[in-house]
Image 1 (tube, rainbow, N blue to C red):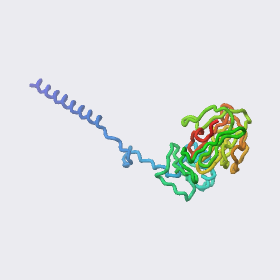
Image 2: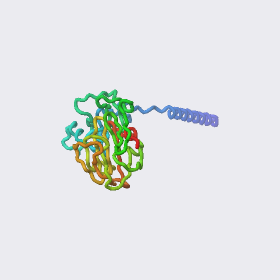
Image 3: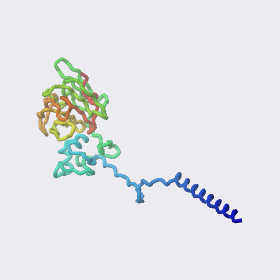
Image 4: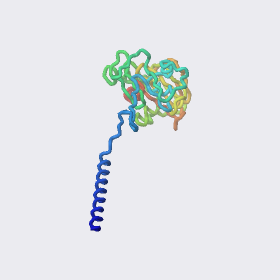
Length: 273
C-alpha cells in the first residue's frame, strides 16, 4: 500500500511538472509585443516629432555653412532668418528656419532628406520642371567660344578645362573631380553671388559657394587661393580661384551643382565637351 502511494505521489509530481512546462512553452511562444505607440508604459518608445516643412534640425557636427549648402541658402540668410546673435553657436536638436520669413511652405509639397531638412521646391519665375524641354537648352560650342547649357534661365559652363577624374556618385562623390595643375584658373560656372569663401567646411579645403537663384548653388573646393569675397557678384567664366590641393590627396577641383540644396549630377546641367 505504501509502495502504491509513493507511485501515485510521484505520478502527481510528474503531471504537475508537465503542466508547468507546457504553460512555460505557451508563454514564450506568445510573448506580448512591446508597445511603441507612446502609451506611457515603461519600456515604450515615444514617437519623434517630424521636422516642420521649411525647417532644419541641427545634427552633431553641423555648422551654418554646411546647413546653407544642404538647404541652398547663404549662412548669413539663415542666421538672419533665425535672429542668431552668434552664427557660430547652434545646438544639436535646434530647429532652424531655412526659408525666408513670410514665405508659405506647404507640408504636403515638402521633400524630406536624410539630413533632417524639409524644403519646398521653389522654381524660379517662369521655369518648368527640371529636364523638360522648356527649362533646358544647350548651346553648341563653336571655335573660340565656350559651350554653355541653359537651365531654368541659368547658363552653365565648365568651371575648369582639365580631365574628369571622378564623376558624380550619390553615395561617394557629390559632384565632379576635375584634374589640373596648382594655380590653374577656376571659373564661375554661371552668374551669381558669392555666399561663402573660406575654409570652414571640413573636407572641402578652401571653398567658394555661389548662389545663382532660389534653386541653384555651385561649390568649388580644394583651391589654393580664393580670388573673390562674400557678397561679391561674379559672372560666368570669371576667374574666382586658383586650383590647389587643400584638404585633398592631389591637385584638383571638386565641383558641385546643388538644386534646393540637394547634390545633382553635373552632367544634367553642363554642356558636353
